[in-house]
Length: 230
Image (cartoon, rainbow, N blue to C red):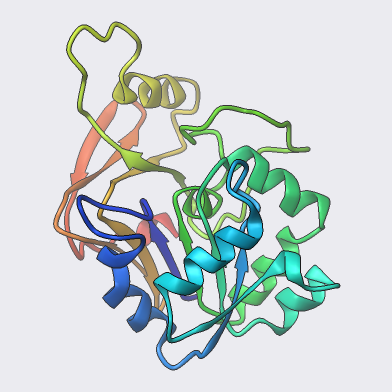
């Protein structure tokens, strides 16, 4: 599989997807066309969302899956698959409604490049139970693409705002690990990514990520081999 899981679409002062341009280009290699799945977009219309991605990746022809008559056939014929961020529950719900989960898994298992960001990365784990999003719609199941044999938590932060008295991200992830002690969570900060290539899983970017498992929190670093989670 060739899977690039970006924590976010933006990082710092960079334009949309700009911080990850070199990663995206290297991951796509010579691919000139890509199918974009905008289903996580709720307040942003899918046509506008697709155009936004096209502007961010101008050297690749981007087709939105909503623009085709047969979404399943479009997945089968895709040269690459891009899945954008937004609401993870809505994304998974619509992938299930269009019966695309198995189609995407099969296509990616055939080495079709996959790039996701935010929600599009969240669905690469076992399930979406460690998303940061509100459940604005109810999917049939939380089970996801399972490219990684772990949970994912994009946009990870350990920042705590002054006078904030709600649970921190670490506390929320600890709750998951308490009830699911055998299921690790890979938490990645904005500006970083996880990549699967040549049957290896690595962290990309200058910022450390973390593995939450049972009652532990272990730092992971740039280019660290995380293949045990495949």
